[in-house]
Length: 94
Image: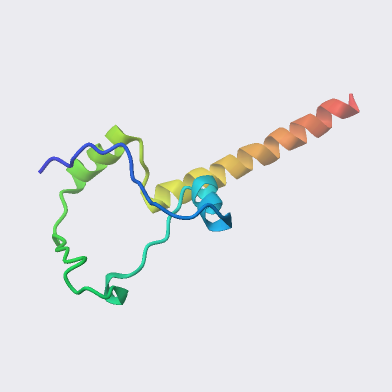
């Protein structure tokens, strides 16, 4: 199965600190389907078996990461920022 190519996800919300947080952190909050007032509003069936090779290909094609990869990338970015700050402090001492 080939995953669809999607480039955008829209979430309509008021302009406030929560919506700014969505833009800054690139994370959205959605309610659990159990909390919906219409039982047919979110009648989604997930396949228990996922073709991981096709899914990884989809993630690569769309430039997305899995949660673990994203956390690893964030840690690496923080480490690089710390190293850059150390280098900047060292260059001011010269």
